[in-house]
Length: 304
Image (cartoon, one colour):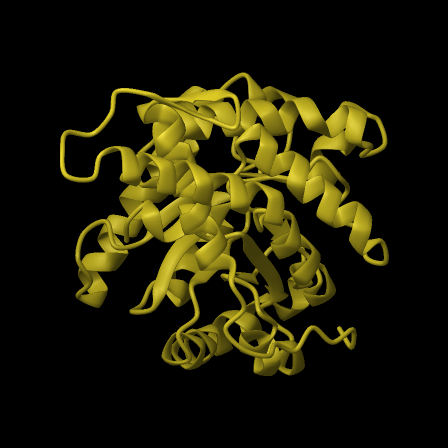
């Protein structure tokens, strides 16, 4: 598992770990990764059955080339049982809900190490995603991002707003998104956050706008709770035509200026100075546009 695995992923789609029908089609939904959810999506009465079936689902989805995450329960007694079922070849990361203290992540990391060895997996093969769901967690972001195995920070907007005692409006959610992006970037890890309620299902334009805003804040991707959200999220993380054209002009001019001689220290493009950091940004934008190019048809059905 490497950090790069997640920083290039625009979407992680939650799929209830106890829903056989949804799991059967999860690999067709077009998301960059799947979160098999053992927390909120599975009632207490169904958790044991979901754990028993989980290895088979993980094996099948991994064979289909899916990037797989499992969201566990919050309490240690719950997540230990969840991890006994989840840790196996093909699992890429585990998401811990309501992460507020580095010690929570350190305890899970230590347990993961034991499970990896029992399963014959390399140490560190399973990463950790810290799900930020409270105002208190914002003030521990640096420590959470630097905890063992943490490969991403993610934002649970509904629980965060509930803890704050307000509705999940963009004005409430934008600043936490910014903080999460900054902490993740400083640690060199991925971030998944939107300045919009995750419950929004029938406003794709608003969702795409929120994704563009998140990308502008430095967030690397978003969580999705319904397959119908995936396309809008991807649209928000796809560089627009004007930006891509600018990046091509920058790289073309730079390559031409350095042809047959040393690379220029700086040059002028579209009335703006281009130096090494601007060139790197242009090349990163072109790489993102290439990665976002469609590769085939995807089922984004609304039969969830």
